[in-house]
Amino acid sequence: MVPVTATLVPPPVTDVRPSRLAGLRGRFVGGLRDTPRRLAAVLAGLVALGFVVGVVGFTGVRQRADLIDGVTSRSGALVVAAQNLYRALSDADATAASAFLSGGVEPAAQRDRYQNGVAEAAAALAVIAAGRSGDGARDGAVGVIAAELPVYTGLIETARAYNRQGLPVGAAYLREASGLMRQRMLPAAQQLYQSVTAELDQARGGGAGFPWIAVLLGLVTIAALVRMQMWLTRRTNRVFNIGLVGATAAAVVLVGWLGVSAVVIGTRLDASDRDGSAQVDRLVQARVAALQARADESLTLVARGAGGDFDKDYTAVMTRLIGPDGHGGLLRDAAERAADEPTRAAADRAAGRARDWLAAHQKLRQLDDGGQYTEAVTAAVGSDPGATTSIFNQLDDTLASAITRNSDRFEFDARSARRGLSGMDLGVVVLTGLIVIGSAAGIQRRIAEYR
Image 1: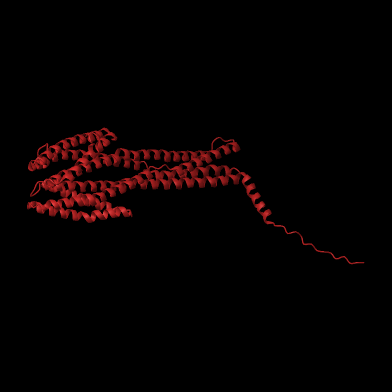
Image 2: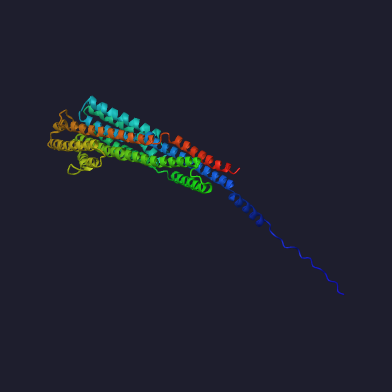
């Protein structure tokens, strides 16, 4: 008999991990089918969602508050300083040229106005320098003006010294100073103004932004709370759950507050631009143009027959100010785009004064071109109400008053926007607490009924 040898076959290897995972999954799902555990899971989700809404809402409120504070305390202040710098430099240059025509010792009023212009320019430059933001172009423009301002004032003092002695070389120093102002300092001041205006627009745009994320999360929270109440109504035959109703009400108030306040704040910030800073910008441009024309008029006379380029520049600037027909230009634009009647009336008055000035200037040029230089100088800087200096001062005063009034309007609207966020950060915290507490109280009470 042939012996039979048995072959041992190893049992199949079975991976028990899938069955274990399936068991864990089954126990988890089964646990969720257990009503108390399901309620506990929903409670955890609602509490977490409430906290997320609160954190996002609170953070958004604080960020918007900081941006709006920047509109008034930083960006707005820098824009005002840049406007003052540009205007003060232009005013100093125009006044220095006008005072030069007096010969000898210039009138005290003009001397004081020149010195005030230089002092205001230095003060405005200090404000801008203190508010540097790491912008290389802005810092470079500040450096240009800081370096050139003492050079400019030195040239003016030299021109005055020679003018008191009756030496013609004084006019050359005056022209050099004015050239430095126009070619170096005023372009740098314009660059500063554009830079800080862009910063203001960015801050204002951020402050006026709608809190979409917080509002959407709030709506999700409201939907979850309503869905939970409907489920509990079907399970318990109870219409209301006081805790969840309170949490839902708090969530509705929070979302409504965030949304409505954003609309109101955006409206106020838009008004601060439309009714404030935009109008100020147009009026400042017109005022600076008038100052430049005044300097051109004076420098034409200072040049004694060799000021053709200055007179051409005067004509070009006046065309930009009131248009070729006297009824357009910057002042017409300011009147048409004015947001209120006082600003419109001020722009119209300024345009009328500019037309009077242009007519007086034409008579002045006839005197100068006809060899009556002394009479032409008197027509420019004399005390007669028809002198161009008198008409220019009325134009300048009208624009200055309108600029001040619209600057106040900008600040009022910007501060009104900031007041729209007053207490809102605390309100978000309180409402978030009510959402969390209401959710916990409402669901925990149902869980307790199963024990």
